[in-house]
Structure formats: C-alpha cells, structure tokens
Length: 352
Ligand code: ATP
Image (cartoon, rainbow, N blue to C red; front, side, top):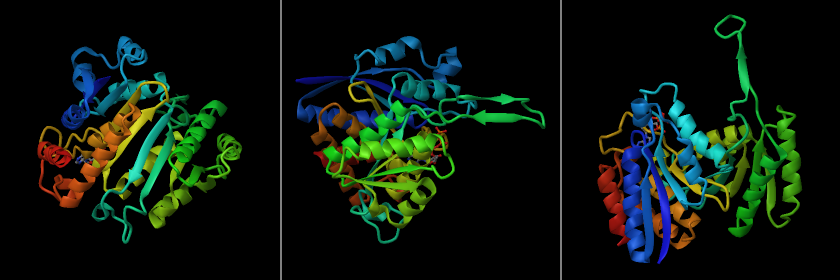
C-alpha cells in the first residue's frame, strides 16, 4: 500500500471548515484506491498566536523541510483580531520563502459554463494554468521607510529579480507546457516601464523559449494581459509572470472560472514538500456558519494527489466537482442552498 504523510494547517476562519471537508473527500478516495494517507494536525494560526505569541515555530519549518511530509494542506490565514497579519505572513510567506516553493501554480479552468461571468464562453475557452513566481519580486519586504509619519515621509519597496529565480519559473512553465501538450506559453511583465528587472525577464524568456521551439512563446504587458483574459481567454494555455502580477492576474482568473470558492493552488518546488491551499482567504464574515464553499479546498487536495503521484485521483475529483456543479448541488454564493458539509457530501456521493 502506498503511504503518504500530510501536514494539515486548517488555520483561521473558514480554513477550519474547508480543510476537514477536503480531508473527508481524499480519505474516501484513498480507501477505494488503497492509499494510506496519514495526517498530522498543526495548531497554527490566529488563535495560537493570540494564545502564546507563536506564529511559525522553527522546528515545524525544519520538519516540513526534512522530507517527513509529502505535502502540506493549508486552509486560510487571516483574522480581524490580528490586524498586523503577522501570523499569516510568518506562516504562509515564511513557508513559501524558507521552503523555497518558487512555483505558485494556479489552474484557471471553468468546469461548468453557467458559473463564469463571461458571455458566450465555456470550458473549452477558459482552461489555462498560471505559473506565478513565488519567492521574489515585490514580496520580499526589501525596502524601508524614512521620516515615517511626517510630511516628508519616503517609502521604498524594492522588486527583487534574480536570473536564477526568473529562469527557474520560466523553465517550469515551458516544461509544464511540454509535458501536458499545451501549445503556448505567455510571459507577462511590464518591461516597457520597468526597464531593469523586467528586461531581465525579457532576455531570460527569449533564451528559455529557444529551447522549446515547438511551443509558441507569447509576450503581453500585464495590463494588456488583463484585457485579453476577459476579451479572449481562449488565447491562453500557460501564463508565467512575477509574484505581484501573478497575485492579481490569478484573482481575475478565479472569477473567470466561477469565483473564489472554486480556485485551487499549489506552492511547489519539484522534489520538495508541496503546499496546497485554496486561493480564498479566511472569510471571517461567513466563518463558523457552514456557509463556505469547500470545492476550492477539495480541488487543491486533488492537485496535492497529483503531486504525490496519483493524477488519476485528481481527475476523479475534478470530474466529481464538475458533475456536482452541473447538478446545481452547490453552496449559496454559487446560487445553491447547500452548506459546507452538505456540499462535501454531494462530492463524496458522486464519487461513489
Ligand atoms: P483574508 O483576510 O483571510 O484574505 P478575506 O475575507 O479578506 O480573508 P477572502 O476570504 O478571500 O478574503 O474572500 C472575500 C469574501 O469572499 C469573503 O468575505 C466571503 O464572503 C467570500 N468567500 C471567500 N471564500 C469563500 C468560500 N470558500 N465560500 C464562500 N464564500 C467565500
């Protein structure tokens, strides 16, 4: 029996509801497929921080980095009681940076035409994968403030782009396209205005693209990409971009695929532990009320199963979610009437 050990961090708000929902689904599949999934629950998040000041213990990070776990499944981090968001930064950004999870992989795939806000677009049109650089860019915190809280205040936020970092994310996008028969890779930057860092992206993109002559290499400035994603999403197969632009573009993508309740993601570094999480946050407004859509977490757990070497199980999850969406057995924000638990039951029932 194949065995995998998974670290669970439900975290804050609706993370506490959607992670157990996803675990129920993968446990159901594992029982059928003869997989031995075991879990260790990590008490990390706002409650823990408020209780004893702990955000991300160094020994936990070391264990996640040690190969003990095949994957980490995270819910959400964010709580109005911690306005500084320090725990979320230490845990999620800490894991991304310290584990060097340089790929933020976000599929944008419409599973049922009725859930996209775009007129006359269907599942064949909205089916792409975004590779967002996850360890550099504008999210490293490099910079500073000078003369804070005075009329002369200066604030600098530096964008970090290294050749190694840019090359490995662009290469990952081309390798993915190559392996999955995707005909094109679109790199998006703002090299017309950001002439140093994004010139590096331009040069590296051309060099890596030359190694993949069978794959069309497209380039769009990020503002044009946003327009084109709405106007003609069928143009896109694989998109690769930096940390900030990827953050924004993938939220646009989440809406194209039916909303934040359906958007899944993985934080990856091939050969290392992968961290999987729904794109949505902790949603304090609906937390604890059995209102959260569990499908984003369930689809993220599907991505995790592929990462663990079981792509056929992710396909089963995707098909089940597709069937559930088609039947209308969904949560309220998608126009249905089910709660989190009942929406999870619906997926398990379709899985049979
Ligand atoms: P955070 O600060 O943790 O990022 P947030 O509430 O600011 O949380 P999100 O949770 O990403 O941001 O989403 C904003 C709103 O979208 C939520 O307040 C909630 O109403 C809705 N929402 C998010 N996720 C879901 C979900 N899984 N199911 C239903 N509604 C959701």
